[in-house]
Image (tube, rainbow, N blue to C red; front, side, top):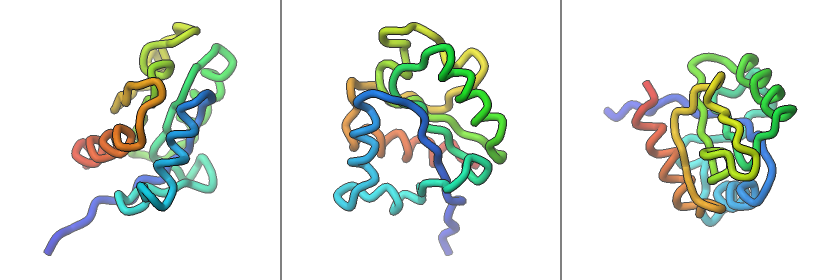
Amino acid sequence: MKTFKPTLKYVRVGLSCCGDDWIQTESSRYDLERLGCIRAEQVEDANLLVIQGTLNASLQTEVESFYAKMRAPKYVIAVGTCACGGGLFPLNSSEKIPVDIYVTGCPPRPEAIMNGILSLREVQK
């Protein structure tokens, strides 16, 4: 009998064009739910933090507070070139928040985002 891994409940933080492709990934065409990844209603219920787009200093403070409120085990995915490498505002988000999966691209295609989720499922305990 096959056992399923626990559901990933995510909260998204970020701006820019990466959010559009994440919304496409949530749509019926790509259906992120079939990978066991659903949106959390509150930060306290989430175990996956999705960082998208540019992180400036004030937004990084909010992201750190979201990460502190999340339930364990905590996972983080950085989506897009700006979140992975800094983009216009080179601020390394992984200094205080450990990033598990990097999905590069500007913006990354929904297929790349789904591949990142599948890679996280392999890492997940």
